[in-house]
Image (tube, rainbow, N blue to C red; front, top):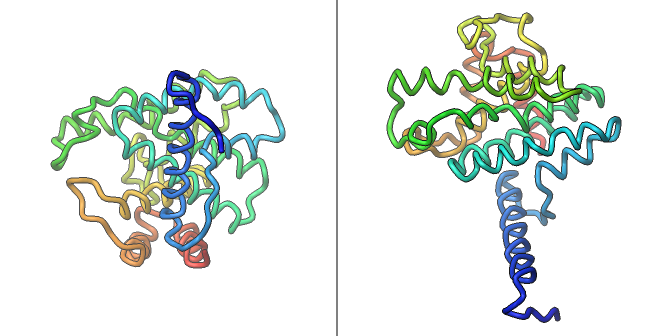
Length: 242
């Protein structure tokens, strides 16, 4: 058994890290809603696993990990939301048999899509009631802000439109540009479904949580309006198989 000297700060830090990792492993098992053994692996570690084409990109993305940590300190929901959306996108990417390059782009976008929330006030992020019009307008800026941050990273040019468009809707009523149908990036249309599904199935103080089945029904109802019909069907199929 390892001996921990109470005066050794590094050992204490290591112990806290083990506890945190175990907690995240439990969280990931709950996310999949099944009884299983889950080994901890952060989203950042999973990005390492898929990043086998250009290792320089991993170095470029490291500063963004710090921004996501800051967001986590302000709003734990956003951080855990990113973890879940990343995993949903991983599942649907495999189900659709996306190319390695497209899968990488989708997973990078899933990891980075809410970076712009760093510019959203904490009051808006953790609001316990329905957002005011001003708060809603503030929140709607985050896709553009996320894209603007990602533009600064060499090699991430193809991630930008996915992140920018993840709140566009298939019928053209989304934001920030009101794009419609196939004028929206295919990978952004996937991210939209994953992002929305997670928002529906996880509790916020001002929103009643939906079960998976209720969320599937909502996605079915919104095919052709909010969601690409083909992607919506495949997303439901993929999650029902796990």
